[in-house]
Length: 295
Image 1: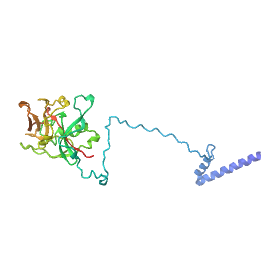
Image 2: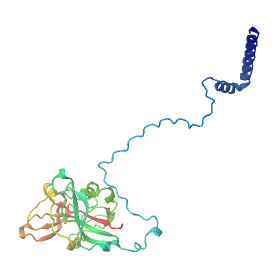
Image 3: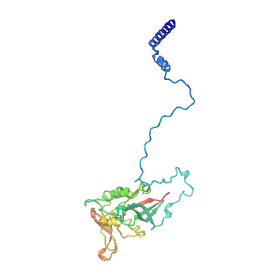
Image 4: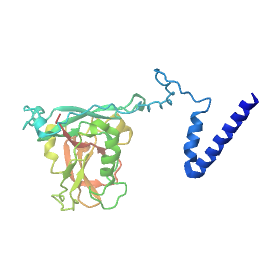
């Protein structure tokens, strides 16, 4: 037994010496790998079972969607070849008649904010290929043409800024906004006074001009205020009529044209090309838009 132990000790010593020599030869990493394999806790058995799956980290909950406008995908062909034959060259505005009522968008109108916004009723007062010109049936709000009473034009007035940002964002959800077209607007000088009308503008929401006033034959030209507009201070008289802004310049640069019901003469409709001061707070706002009617 002692002889066996001495042989075992000698064998161990020789092995240790070999390991030292190999390590010195730069193969220490290989030796460590060999020793690691020979560790008692290393399982060399072969198994047909699938390896145990580690538990996946919990996925974050999806973001809440309440309060977001309902999104509906709008049909859009990828290429001209994908357009059905029934679409090619078809003018979708032909399905609308001048004077038709269109319900589109929503805005506070009944004066009760607790029941949400009400759908906006518009009249079709103009058409072009695959688009219709809409004018709101009611004066939806009340505010000055410009916050200050200084000289201004439609291009620079605060009413234009409000319509294209605050009103646009409030009245149309993300889906509806796709149908409100950018429109190049001419702002001619006042035809009677020659007052400068300003440069051409590109707007989504706007007021009609003196030149566009003729289109009102397809809508009620009298301004009728919503309850909300009346609450906001629009001047109301003669069976619920109110004045409303046009975008054209008035008789002077600090005045803007508007439509008026002459309360002193039985209520006939009047077009005030001479206008009123741009900071007049009692004039109603009757928005207009070009709306795409393509599918």
